Length: 146
Image 1 (cartoon, rainbow, N blue to C red):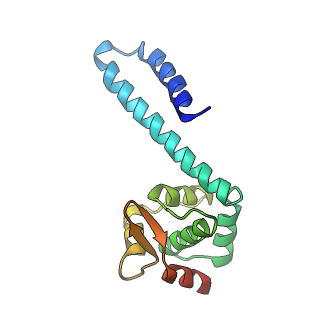
Image 2 (cartoon, rainbow, N blue to C red; image 1 turned 90 degrees about the vertical axis):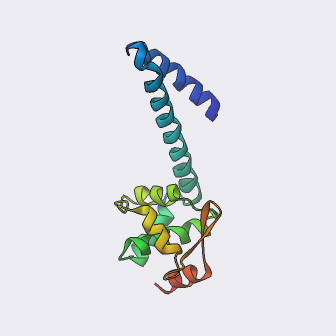
């Protein structure tokens, strides 16, 4: 089932659910539920992409086990390295968040700041390019030296 068909079925189900909601609230509730549904589908496709490229997450788990990163910044570097080597070159915040989830690790409280630090002048593990992150040569070198 493609994304259009999936959303069509889910929209029909939402429409049925809305019949029990007062008419004055239906539009707002529908839009809220529809956005949540669409976002969850996008998150699932990012997780599927990662799992497809990393032997169902095994490569991520192996790297975390072997490198034993001691900070969230180091874990983010490990995830970026594994994704890059697995063919995922454009890394988003959702990618990193899904890696934490796949490895059953707690997502940093401020993941945005974690990625800013990783791409900032102090660490330079990642580069921010337009709308995504890419691992840098420095990031690769630091990972390999861990």
